[in-house]
Length: 364
Image 1 (spheres, rainbow, N blue to C red):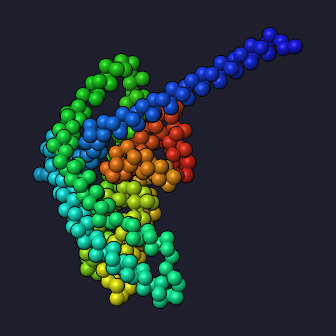
Image 2: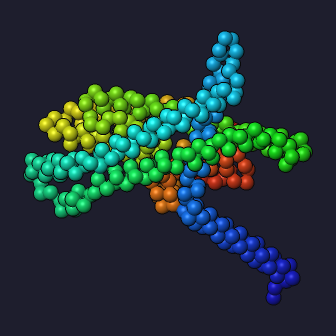
Image 3: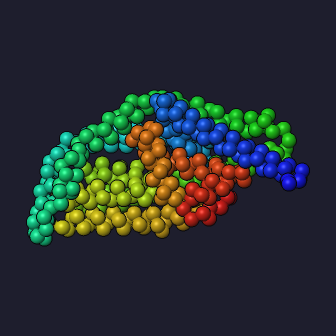
């Protein structure tokens, strides 16, 4: 016969379980609703997210510019912000425009490259005395490279068409930054509580600035060195591949692999009579990626986490499904920023640890 204490204990465990199930169902519903809204309103959210990331890059460049002394004085903040805004958006627009133009050019000659590659593939199997696998033949025959690059170009052209909206969002975000401190005072009148919240926000801000600043610098150096290697061998569309490397470098592991494989395969197709360009491009870009991604970037990035490869892959699929190709480019910066925010709150820090590569992500 059950005692009253045992009955109470069972009821208490049942209530705890019910609360957990209810909480889990509630959070699942919230997450699903958010994803549906993000997909349905992508024309609104994509320019907004691009604007937020652009504003961070503007503030990073502005802080660097303020360290430069002119006539023994640091330049005014307003001047450095205007200069940084013009540089980031001017370069961004120019880079996007070049990528779009070159993507259309690559798409126009893609059938010729595809035919050459199929021919090389047949020659390879013929020389080694092995019958070409039907599966490989079918894959190459069905691969529509022209459609792929046309889709990329048209998608990025659509982003360029909304540049005025991105600029407008960015201006309003920059104007709002002036009132953050006064809003904190109004929200948290208690000095101790306000100081604690301000410290958390400053850590989040510093970590995001560090990530975006270092990642942009590393991507720029990687793209520049890769461009020099490709120009040395006379690779077609070297400027396009360099810009693609710069963009794809924001996607760790997967982005680096794609950025290395594509120009390497092009070198094989473009120079079918010799393996030298193929080896130079493949080994050279791989060496640059390893130097920057495995040695310099971890040292410069400091405590900022590297995401788990599984998280990167899932994030790529998820954001690609929600926002298409643009979502694939933005997926890792969005995920890293989210994890940085979660890492600075004790109640959600466990999520950042699970999403990190080694599980040793440390809060600053």
